[in-house]
Amino acid sequence: MKDSGKKSEQPVTACLFSAAFFGALGSSFIYGYNLSVVNAPALYIKAFYNRTWMERYGEPLGAETATLLWSVTVSIFSIGGLLGAVSVTMILKILGRKGTLLLNNIFALIAVLLLSLGESAKSFEMLIIGRFIIGVDCGIALCALPMYLGEITPRHIRGSIGQFNAILICFGVFTGQVLGLPELLGQENRWSYLFTFLALPAVLQLCVMPFLPESPRYLLIERRDEAGAERAFQRLLGKKDVSQELEEVHAESRAQDNMHTASVLQLLRSQAVRWQLITIIVCMACYQLCGLNAIWYYTNRILRDAGFADNIIPYITLTTGAIETLAAIISGLVIERIGRRPLLIFGFVSMAVFFSLLTVFLNFQDSMSWMPYLSYVCILAVIASFCSGPGGIPFVLTGELFEQSYRPAAFMIAGIVNWLCNFAVGLLFPFIQEALQAFAFLVFVVVCVLGSIYLYFVLPETKNKTFMDISQSFAKINKIPVPSPGQEMELVLSCKPDMYGKDIIKMESSF
Figure 1 (cartoon, rainbow, N blue to C red):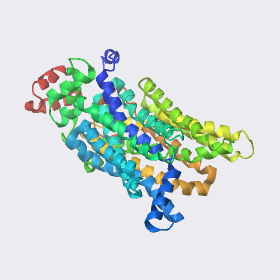
Figure 2 (cartoon, one colour):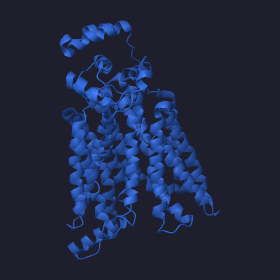
Figure 3 (cartoon, rainbow, N blue to C red):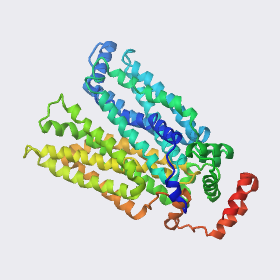
Figure 4 (cartoon, one colour):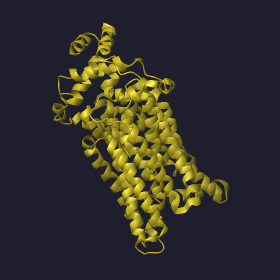
């Protein structure tokens, strides 16, 4: 901690920036793009379903069957994501962080082929299977990428680099909106190219990532490859002397009872990480249940009520994607100054405030001609509030709150919660909206308020702290003893000399 000032002057290397950017481009960007890509061509895809059904069975597609097919097409993305999250621990253990990201591109390219060729093959099944496979890709990516970014980054910029995940998600959403415009690919004879575009980020990642380092923490703790970890740190940090970084990882490794990767069951049973796990579950549940996904349902309706013509609404809704991206970038720039905890709590509290105002404005929308404009401003404010903290920090925290052996299982649980809540919102919100009408947003006010209260009392600040420091900050609430310096010395002396070689002698002398 004493040389943190010196570390803060260290610039971000080209290697570290490339790892963050291309890692997120082939992962987070694809997830964000798939959140918005089906909106613009929805009518054309439904027409393709009807046309294919007519050619096969000689009769038009029934209304109920059409609704079912479209619902499956949209929702199966979340089911694929859940499967990806469930399988990620096993893949990470075998292939490592970088290897998992590279393998994941195979799912993306298979999905691209199915989604792009479904229309010419006259098979709507190909589109449904393609959406499922791209969901698997995104489920794996949202676990593997934040873990990789957290493990390759120095602690003084870990939050900023971690926000590449959120920035590229938002940029993916925005890109899907732009390419879906009628002048570009949002036409009846071009909509399949919207899915072909997905090949570009996947291919770019495949071309660049093999030349970038694996996570040095993974190499040192799980592979026992000290030389490889040292080379990875040297490339990522742009300096020759990385002994301090290696010692920090060794200290983390010594502090863990189980040197091997913990299973989900071991994570659930461990008292040492109980409140870290509860915190991540709360963060991920609030991430999906805070109401952002439901906002898109109202945007077009509010714009129509404001008097905007249907043909210009797609251009106005581009502001939502632009605000998302801008807020995520600003969050990435200030996160190391302000901290994770204040941004997260501020984001949820702001969302609660603007959802409350939106509820008021929607109820008076018909009485005053200018009220829809205020509603739309509230929508933009909700989006900006979400991206200022809740949109990216839960992924950063999942990597920070757990030490190496627990991290893959923690990301798996976080991913399962994320995708289950995503599916629940898509399934239940139409019924909530039908029952409560404009008051439906008050449900999200409750979620945001409860989430911010929990975080205020439980979550410690994690900026510029080692993974060991963060774990020890939960020791009291987890009711486990914090090791004293003497106990730490005993732990060092109890390590087998052949496990770490000559570096153990170096580290013992540093205590």
